[in-house]
Image 1 (spheres, one colour):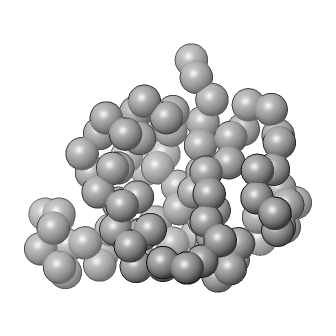
Image 2 (cartoon, rainbow, N blue to C red; image 1 turned 60 degrees about the vertical axis):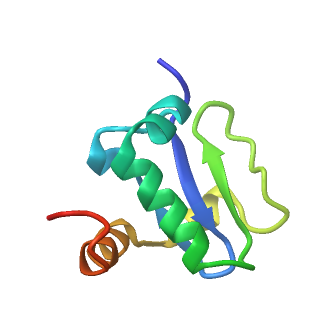
Length: 93
């Protein structure tokens, strides 16, 4: 099994999880329509923020700011993003 990824927004101190969609690897995130749409929508809605995928595989923090420890306290926004996609009629509930 590949590494699991979480999308982290250091600017807003938010995290977007894909596990609720039963995906977490790079291939699953990119290859699952709902997950790919969710990621793209989040990135478009938060242009200019410091955002990146972090992997649980090697615990390397790839962003210039923040840390693994700090990210544990970031707000988890997955349900909010899904709700906004449903409201925008991009995803169906």
